[in-house]
Length: 486
Image (cartoon, rainbow, N blue to C red; front, side, top):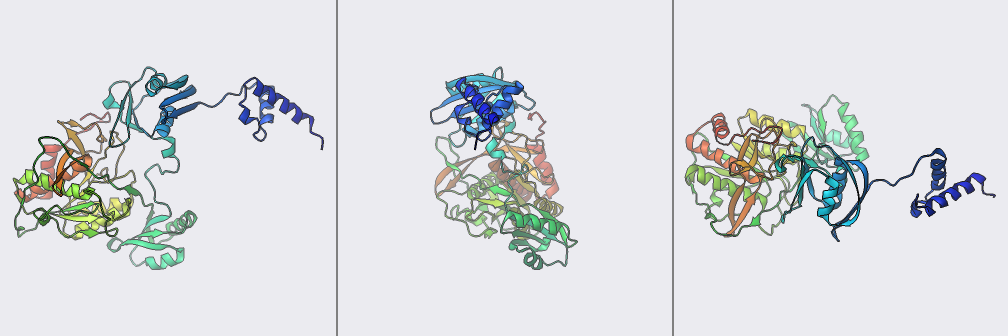
């Protein structure tokens, strides 16, 4: 068949474009590309390559060809290619225009950021952090998510696929609904008529959501959000480390013992003297796996006991009720945390500590926390180990005492500075495990320490929860503005 004249003409224009570097050769063989070049030439429209950034982390060299790109987009590209944690001073806008090849990262950042200030802070225990700002480094609090992190992720948190959390009205039977929807019941909180359902695929889950939401038997249908497993602690070295905790367990009082519900990973043995302060652990997600070192839950229990020693002088009747919501899994969920809170409250907890969190705002978890608050069970939660203002849940719920970390009376450089924060507590603790000291740093430690002080105060003074909360606000209260100052 004879080639049409328009196609011959199009390919002729395309070859001309390649020969004169108007069009990269690799695009010549793309379907319909020669026609597109012809149309562009005939219409007087220039063809220019998209803004590109190539950050070669293996060779530590950077190349860029960027023409008037918004700052946020460039920083997202940097985050995606370097895996850095990047923070920007809120309200900072700029256009990026830079063309260079094979520069060192420092030189590349200078050209990309122009007259903006920046600080690249290495972190041997985690990802390097890049702060971009006009005024001060402390003002850079807006976390820039990489394009890779944005794709496929729920804006309000990491949704667990193929799952729904369903709350039924009294009288409705979850077994009947599960059969109807073809779902598997993987969790339940019977007192709340709340259930965790798993489906074969996303399409089945979407169809089930529509059916459930249309039914008068259903109170609510929500997503289940993932909560990452907290990082374990690092061994501590150096002089002037505090000695191991020394505590004496007093007999419980007649009018009610103070028990701290610790919702976390498994708690290991702290030795025969301190194990007296640990009640029998409750498991929500199965038995915990074998940890090579001290688990996060163990470090939080040790931090609570250290703060109890400091608050009471070394003699207390307070005990800890460990509730493992992780088991051997790499993460947990908002549903499991809600189960853990209910189990702790039913087990006699008078204070609850949650040194965990995520961006997922879950209605069931919020409801469980509200019920605990109505029963005068104070809840302390870690505000997050990122110097940003983004809400972290459950700490951001109004019924929760959100605890951030301070150093020498100032907000720690790594700590959350959202306006939801209510308490600032030192975020460093030393815990001994198998006669070896470990250093715990973060808002997790700050929250556990706050729970320990609160429990010690209630035990020593026989005060109410309201009196304890007033004491904690007076001693550790912080007021954080939108700018992040204290």
